[in-house]
Amino acid sequence: MKNAVIMAAGKGTRMKSDLPKVLHKLMEEEMISIICDNVKNAGAERVIAIVGYGHEQVEKCMDGRCEFALQEPQLGTGHAVMQAKQLEGSEGKTLVVNGDCPCVKAETYASLYAALDDADMVVLTCEPEDAASYGRIIRDENGNVEKIVEFKDCNEEEKKVGEINTGIYAFDNASLFAGLKLLKNENAQHEYYITDLVEILKGMGKTVKAVKTNDWQEVQGINDNVELARATKYMQKRINTYWMKEGVTIMDPENTFIGPKVTIGHDVTIYPNTYLFGNVCIDSGTIVMPGTWIRK
Image 1 (tube, rainbow, N blue to C red):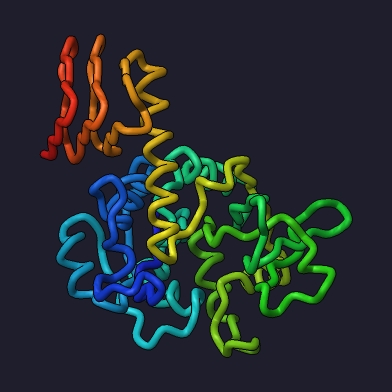
Image 2: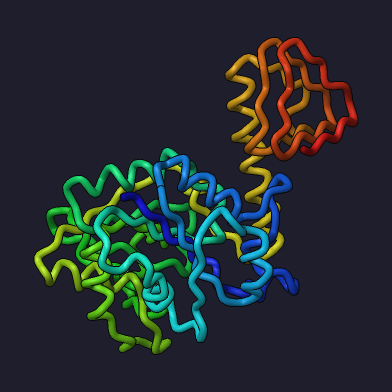
């Protein structure tokens, strides 16, 4: 059984909105909706959303598409995963993904599932242009993952490390829940960090490894409307590039917006200022004229 846990409990204070952060949209699709589709496309058969702030709104949006577990109060990432009690005692592989990282591709999630064939925990990492305040991946002399250190707990040497934790993981499900029982909140924030599972599982004789993505923008998190616009632009370019390589003529990619669920046939030409969202299907031979907005 392949599972996925989506961390969707946060308010998203920096969005300065009453709407839960995971319900903000890219290309007219809620972040959590995009993520749910991508983990399912990667093979997830069971999806649990960890909800908190505005959970009624999130549950209404995602009704029938996933299960829910309430995190209240919110005491850290490890504490969030503890709430997915419906997965405890079962066998299989479990993704743990961020509800504010909608640009991660299904293929990337699938690579984490695959990496579990010879590991108990897999950490998705990257090297962004600016490591900023992200948690650092600390490796031993042989290049193996030794631990993850939250930036606020890093010493000066650890802050110089360029490889960061994306906050996206995959676990053998039994190992995950065995490790969660040993989590403690002995840190600056008095929270239960899922990152501590690296050292806990290694101490149990389990295997922990990392998978690095070469595209740091794919794993960008969204914390405010500036980052939302940046992620939207990234997704717009990625989708348009895909369709152009499939033979679609897009006259002005900068001013053409195609949602992730849209399908397009052969010999299609799309003129500028076009917006195609939802489950729209453009038949072969179609010419989409300027100023078109379609959503299904």
